[in-house]
Image 1 (cartoon, helix red, strand yellow):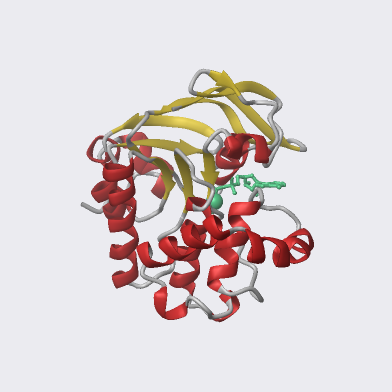
Image 2: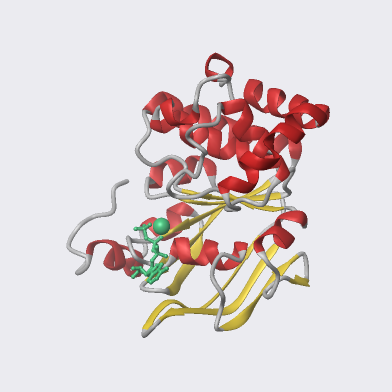
Length: 257
Ligand SMILES: Nc1ncnc2c1ncn2[C@@H]1O[C@H](COP(=O)(O)OP(=O)(O)OP(=O)(O)O)[C@@H](O)[C@H]1O
Ligand SMILES: [Mg+2]
């Protein structure tokens, strides 16, 4: 689905992504792991068009999207969630979902407020899709709650819902499971699996919890210090010396099995 080909992203002198190549296979759930500061979020930003790449190419089903704007990539079926949820805190859950359908992720909030009355009145289909998304994510109890009042975990679910409202073929999930309780974590995993198996959605997810990654992902890509360290199954990478070294520096610790 996605091909990352020798991509470089620098911030001043810092090479946040340094010559990285890998693929995100169609119909699979791929994990992107690595220690803090490895460049994982920057890699997602590059794929989604939120940072410019200095060199290299990003392909979406063999089409070069490297120079496209985020909303153009979204129109081609690419969605992403943010490590820090980007909900509009003063809009309700339902309104947030409707807004997501009408705009590229990351667009200015004022445009949305301005257009809100229009699509609330007109877009019956968007309204129905938003209600279905609420039900699918089991957010019915908070459908009219202001998003700012949701728990951290509910915000993560809403973040997934906002991505779904774009009708994507692939979703990049940036630490959607981080900092949320076990029950909600299991629920999110179930939703991801359902979307993958029944709707054929492709996923790439960044997550630090390797048990979670191993339950969800078909394969993983490991980054460290901006570079691609290795690819394989979770079991392969868990026992790989280079990965243990990257995570624990010195390799004195056993990877948690
Ligand atoms: N917009 C930016 N401007 C300058 N430096 C940045 C920017 N975004 C990221 N960086 C730097 O790039 C490096 C990679 O950051 P990135 O956020 O991609 O890491 P990460 O693997 O997602 O880490 P984490 O697991 O902590 O989320 C870090 O050194 C970070 O400080
Ligand atoms: Mg990150």
